[in-house]
Length: 193
Length: 193
DNA sequence: GCATATTGACTGAATCTTTAGTTAGAGGCG
DNA sequence: CGCCTCTAACTAAAGATTCAGTCAATATGC
Image (cartoon, rainbow over all chains, first blue to last red):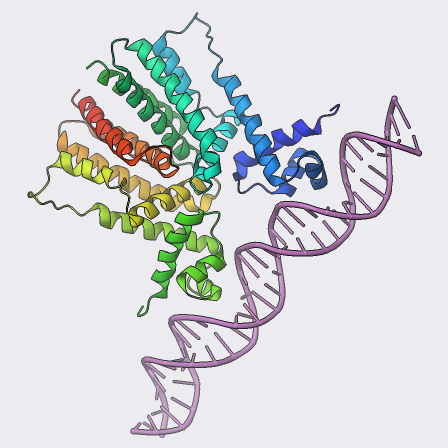
C-alpha cells in the first residue's frame, strides 16, 4: 500500500488499452509500461480478466470526475452552454479523455460478443441519455418528455459514432466538435415545434 | 476463377467476424468455416491482415448491392423515400444485413488500433457520405454543398452509433428505425434555412 | 494424337512466435 | 525469524505462418 505499484499498474493499463484496445492488451507490455515485472501483475490481480475489470472500474471513476466539472471563468453557464459543454467534453485531445473514450468504445464493441457486459453498459447509457434529456428539457421547458428523450438518444448515439470516427483517424477533432455543435442546434430547432 | 474458393473464404470471414469479432477471428476457425485448409488462406491472401482488408472490401461491395435495390411495388420512389429507404436498410433482422453491420462495426472499431485498415475504411465511408449528401441534394436542390455534406456526415455517424447499440442489444430494432426517420426529418428541416 | 513440361489450386504437417500464467526464491524490514 | 513485495526465469499451449509436396488441367514440341 505504501509505494502503490497497484495504482501504477491500473494507470498503465488505461494507457495501454487506449493504445492497443482491450483485446490488444498484453501482460508483458503492461508490465513494461508500469515499470514492473509480469509476475507482479499476478500478485496484485488474479488474472488478466481481473486486471480488465479493475481497470474499467478505475477508468469510469475517473470519467465521472472530469464530466462533472461545471465551472467557468465568467460565472455559471446557462443550460444551452452546459449541454454543449457536456457533449464536447468527449472531444478533447487529452490523454485521459482519449483513454476514456477508447475504453468506452471498446466496451460497447465488446458487448456485441460478450453479453455479460451488457448490463452495466445499458445502465450507464440510460443514465447518460437521461442527463442529456434533462438539459434539453431545461432549454425547452414546453417540449414533451418522449420527444426530449428521442433527441437525447440521437445526440448520444451521434456522439458515439463521431467518437469512433475520431479515434480511428477518420475525422479531425475540430470537425467532430463542429458537427456536434450543429447537431445541438438542429435538435433544439426541432424541439420548438 | 472457376470454383472460387476465394469468394468462399471471404464469405466465411464475414460470418466468422460477425460471430466472434475481428479480434476473435482465428485462421483455423476461418479455414474450417470455409471448408478449406489454413494454408489456402495464405495462398490467396498474404496474411491475416490481408484477409481483413479484403473482407472489408467484400463487405462494402455487398452493402452497395443490397443498398441500391431501388424498386417498389407502387412505381419509382422519390428522393426523400429513397433516402429513408437507404438508411433504414441497415436496420433489418436478416442474417446478411446483421452480418454486414456487425462486421462493419468491428472493422471500424479495429481501425482504432490497426492503422492498416484505415485507408479502405476511409474510402468506403467517404463514398457513403457522398451518396447520402447526393440524395439530400436532390431533395433540397438549393442547399449549399458543404451544408449537405455536414448533414450527411451526421446522418451516417448517427447510423453507426445506433447500429452498435442495436447489435449490442441496447436498442430495439423498431426504435432504431424510428429515431433514424426522425433524424432525416430534422436534418431536412435544417436544410430549408 | 500423344508423351512431356508447366502451372495454378490446394493440403497435411511441421515450425516459428506470441502469450497467459507459474515457480522458486531474493531483498527488506519490524 | 516471518511476512510482504517483488523479480528472473520458466512452461505450456494457442496461434500464425511456412514447407514440401499432390493433383488436375493446360500448354508445348513432335
